Amino acid sequence: MTTARRIDGKAKAEQLAESITGQTASLLKKHGITPGLAVVIIGEDPASKVYVRNKKRRAEACGFYSVQHTLPANVSQPEVLKLLDDLNHDNAIHGILVQLPLPGHLDEQAITQSISPSKDVDGFHFINIGKLTAGHTADAFVPCTPAGCMLMIEDELGPDLSGLNAVIIGRSNIVGKPMASLLMQRNATITVAHSRTRDLPGVVRNSDIVVAAVGRPNMVKADWVKPGAVIIDVGINRIEETIDGESRSRLTGDVDYDAVCAVAGAITPVPGGVGPMTITMLMFNTLRSARLSAGLED
Ligand code: NAD
Image (cartoon, rainbow, N blue to C red):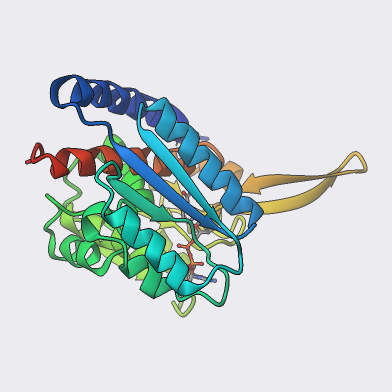
């Protein structure tokens, strides 16, 4: 029985963060610029609070100027837009992100689209989505999760995916669709599967690369997987279980990890795979934005 290589997203993210920290120090030394990241959190969602805390911590560790704006759950739409307008005009800030999901009364699309495309380090602005889709990535921001997945896929298979079949399970704007664009640009033949796809196991069985971004624990089974395939598990699912009479919660992905390990060529674990890469790609985009603002990027 073979065992898939475990793709260590945590270690790769650490390595990348080290390089970002070095480049940040040199940007300050040579050009007097410190990348600035502003994170806006609205309301009390516990998972969002953890994500925001981790982003702030990582930004500071990279040597960034980092600010957090915490707004009450009942903040009005104009108040949010005013804050974003101020941040758009603040020269010390190169990256702005609004942590999703937002409280129901706020218009998520209007808020996301009010961030200047040149500071949209999440890559959610239509300008950045359009540039990515058209293959103009030189000055576009690519959404962090698919960008991180792409780096891990490249590590396994190299930059040219000609002749390989890839399936992305999930068609969200933040993961599935940009992931499809990135894989297509690397010459993979792609299928985007979703809740209406017929015979998903059959589609997966035909794929050399599988990116699972659904939010269903252990959905991708071992007998769906082509031997040797590279599996990127984006899903984050919290499972409650009882061990020795004690109730505990743990995180699991969308892939039945232990069983799939026996068939796949390489696989990302959850936790420790895509998650840490996502946060580090946010730092990558913010550094890039600071460099672009000073005319220092290609
Ligand atoms: P979403 O909730 O917006 O969309 C889920 C997608 O899954 C939809 O396109 C839907 O069509 C598809 N789907 C639902 N049921 C299906 C089924 N039975 N078969 C096939 N497809 C099905 O998704 P999202 O925001 O992209 O998030 C997906 C998962 O990835 C979640 O678990 C989320 O927490 C996780 N996530 C992780 C990171 C990270 O950094 N690791 C980042 C973003 C999202």
